[in-house]
Length: 439
Image (tube, rainbow, N blue to C red; front, side, top):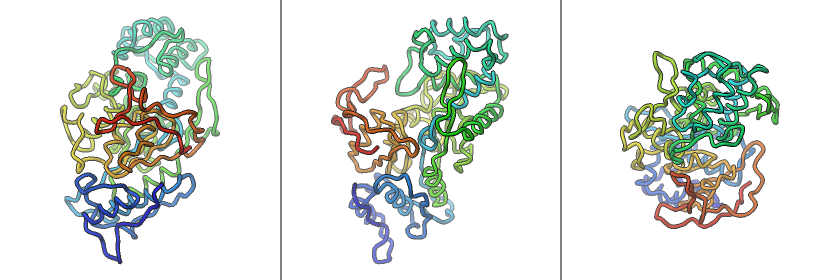
């Protein structure tokens, strides 16, 4: 990796924006012109807050993140009208180890908090649910409760229902291996993720936050590696915050960055977890339900050209770009689905999965990738065509080195209809297969 050189000061003087951009090209943040990444903030440097957690960072990653803070942070109260640099983090397996959506879903099943759908018609819970899945859910769950009432999935009599719900959510198939979802755009939604939010129907956002908080307490108290009983099977039963990411988020915030979370878990669930990392609810962008009279419905809010209730544009791959543009930058309509000018994009982004590829690519200065061996993301990160990608092993239980290369030149990309293809750079050239070197 390139050795980091301090570039924001020379002989004790602050460099002009253009000179800073040239210096960044020679140093750690990559070749970035002011038009690409925006000028560095007018204050910053040696008096900016410092990252304090040293363990777990690979190579020069921590130094380059500190350089980002020194270059873009104001490290002082903002004057009116000054634009704050934006940083956006994915949540699950980026800020925490394991998945808070999963943790909440398992808690809902164990505590009997999923409601029987209206008319006992499971197709009302997701427009992508297959008839086979709707029939399987009806057979397993319909006799257990009246429409609108919670299903007793935490009792022996509700085990079959819990198993069917868990199979559809976790494997996108029924317990008899029939496909559970069909007909979705692989770049804008993931029906299993969306289904968790849709299954919160009938509760208020505050109630779902309280359920997620109870799951949070259990999962933080459980030892690393713990399993929990869900229906007739066991599932992951623990979650941990990454100290490194909490430190990074806190340091960015103290340096004047506007820090956001963009997650494909339900909005109230992420809100219940984000506070400990210093993120307020109004800086969380999760899957958002349409509400009626203050109660969550199975319909989802839309973004861009997608209307509320269409359920096809969640915070997932290209949908994350749309939702960031909508919520952070106030863009409405189809324009929210497109790449914004550099001055209206996040300077930093962090993620761990192919679900994060698009909003990471939109970041103008640095992109931190937590390596979970996800094909498209790792193809782009290791290709590092603009020098702005940082790869770090998982901070807890890192993955072993991937055997064989990532199939970037052939099947690393998944198209909207699910067809695999080559991963392409912005100029249309093909990313060659990449070896896994940071693990």
